[in-house]
Amino acid sequence: MKKLIYAATVAIVCLLSSNAYARQPKICREAVFVTTMHCAKCEKKIVENVSFEKGVVDLTSNLDDKTVTIVYDTARTDTLKLANSIRELGYEVKVVSDNEKKKK
Image (cartoon, rainbow, N blue to C red; front, side, top):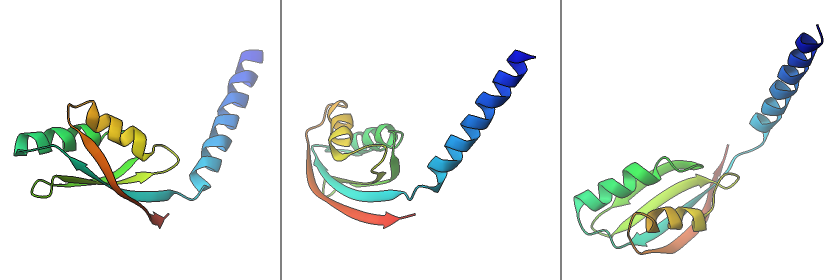
């Protein structure tokens, strides 16, 4: 009986804490990175890998300008972590701009 009460208590606490997190306003920023990608394969590698980083909301790339534009949730990541994720793929990267995008 004690295990059942304990399990129910834990479940209620989890539900309440997740509900409180969901109500917090999401603050997103848009950062533009210049990279050393030089071909479509490089672009694909960056898009496929960085899109799944924590906090990435949207990602677009432009091979002609060698830029990657990332909209991200500031509560989950920042430009340093995003730049490092591109660097880990073997590319040099520089942050060109980082602006507040929208609130949800």
